[in-house]
Image 1: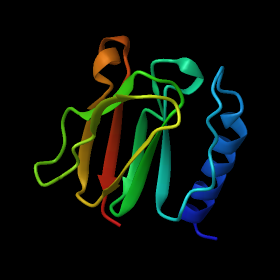
Image 2 (image 1 turned 60 degrees about the vertical axis):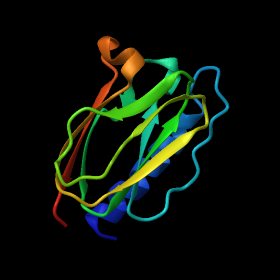
Image 3 (image 1 turned 45 degrees about the vertical axis):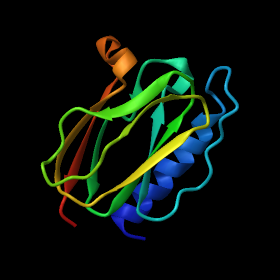
Amino acid sequence: MDRRQFLRTAGVGAVAALAGCAGGTNVTVTSLPPETTLIEVSPDGGYAFSPDTLTIEAGTTVIWKWFDGGHNVVPDGIPAESDWAGHEEWEDAGFEHQHTFTVPGEYHYVCTPHENMGMVGDITVVEE
């Protein structure tokens, strides 16, 4: 098992273990496909992305999964060559948005209704 496989497996286990701790939601996390990373949107009903900073290799798919309603994922600074548009609609618990990041660089995104409460995230995409 290489480092990426270990981290992916460990991360899925940790997320699955914590999924039942989300207050008042019935959202579950299933195992993720290879080359996929999960970001929780509003875990425990809070105004945060978890993790809020992430470094991934180009070609990795990121899935944002909503654990509470009234949030979105909107890019607020991405590489010029990137086609990621985020997801501007406000969604409810259980919704998922995904994107495969192929362009290396720095990505900054926000939840527009809660940006002033610190609900922001950053992804660094590096070459494989």
